[in-house]
View 1 (cartoon, rainbow, N blue to C red):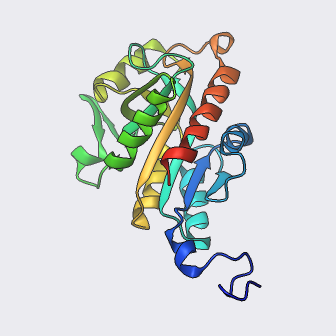
View 2 (view 1 turned 180 degrees about the horizontal axis):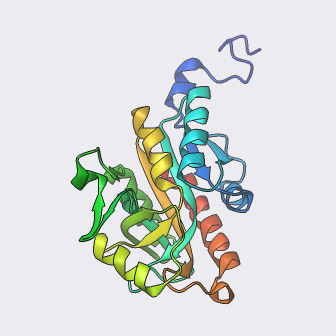
Length: 232
């Protein structure tokens, strides 16, 4: 116990409150470990593997937010990139997180929950933090783009589905399976949220041989090292 601060680690309550705390949610251990390597043990960040899919992501994030106080929540991991928006090995910082398949199918096409009047499938990221992270990644020489990141329950595996999603959300940059769940939990707690994806494959016909998971995990690690400088 430090006699001056009354704290076991010597950090005063005022200083502890001033230190930014960030929760980084990934889906699987490989993503979590890549982020941890980039963060190099920095105590400002907690990094969890919350499971695959929107439900697991939302539940795991909500549990983490109930257990500790944070200032920012980041959904991070690998994902698919839309052609002409995000190349394999590059990074995407979301400017919006969209549950792209949350809605209803009709004879005339897909209707989102927004169109149905049952809430919204869209969650805005914090624009200030997104801009700072994007600028810092570029300054570090990393290839990065911005745009909507789609959350889907089924990974796209055909050119037809890729075209449908692209038409549904013009300018969509990437797809993954957890961002919307993480964002809903953060929003319920009144916290800002970001989503950062490292691109492992093109969105379109499923071809495992063309996936570059190791390359994407390396990009995720590099991006996480940039978090150290900008998320403070």
